[in-house]
Image (cartoon, rainbow, N blue to C red; front, side, top):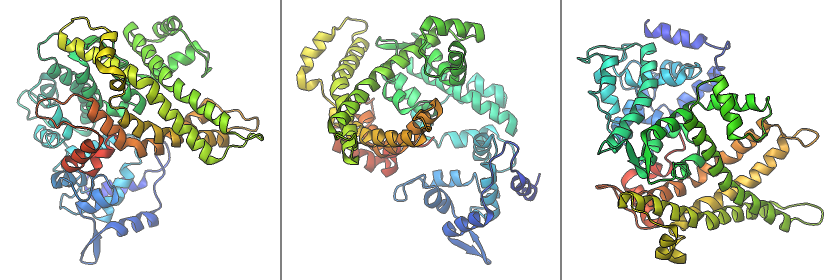
Length: 470
């Protein structure tokens, strides 16, 4: 199929499961706004125009030119270094397809635009990714040979590549485990588990789960391979989890179920392992306990600030939310640091028993709040935004009787959470860098300002917002 026919086909896709196309006049206006090159009366976008100015994916002061060219090549199907309006329009059409993510990824790896992906093209793109630099993938593995052949001369079509990409993501996680399991014991450290999950599986983790990955682990100082596989399997099958829950509750979305009830339904409907169910309930328990303190304090402060008529000014709602965020750090930071110290001590001691009281005595009262400033910087503004926005959005979505369905509650939570999370992401990035133990050759940080300064200097401004996009 030549490029003209491709453009024509993409333009015609609308309805029948496809997203509605953008208005052509508006699309052309957007293109002209960012296109800076004029050739023979026709406007073109450069790679920088598309990636930095239009998509705003990278910091315009600090970016890798190869990365920009690689990303722009997804749209530049003619591979001439410039993006024409038909190419821009075809890309917009591409995003309307149900399998848009796979199609976009295919065009990223099809660097010569011949409609197939070779092993050399795959390696060329992968070696430019931050993920490969952090956790290198074995390009001579049997998995790679199954798709590209033993001599790596086979090329794969779009349909084959989509399956490869799906399987590759799972294989990459296992490869990360193998590399971290340096002595072949079948176990990895908690810090290695956290790095693998946040690097390879971040698109499946919510902010809350990312923040409590270590707490949801088995409780020891290491993570076993069976636990690792079960955790990943659980993340991949959340739709199945929802169906099992609704089967137990006969469609009710707010009813509590016991582990035994859930397990019985899971075995009747599908093969969900007991370990996966254990992880699910442990994860729910950790997230529920974390959220309870902040919700209680928010409601308490709101009640105290409410006037006799039940009115609450917006500043009071923001103050109540900030108090909720602060209280969460006050109550949970000591527990979290003791837990992490116990786990790390267990790692270093090779199984020697270390008691919680010993850790508390060594740290002292102030030591229990080490790293709390970064948590305050994240949780106070987050809750100050989240709780007021959530309360108002929930009220707007309620029916005439003041009732909210699970869908409206979910929508209210998403609307409140997105701006709040976006604002505090830099604080969350800094907190994570301060808490994770630096490996040999990695940058070490000494406090909030030092971390912020080094991250900006070494990785650019956009690094402070890592995790806000896929």
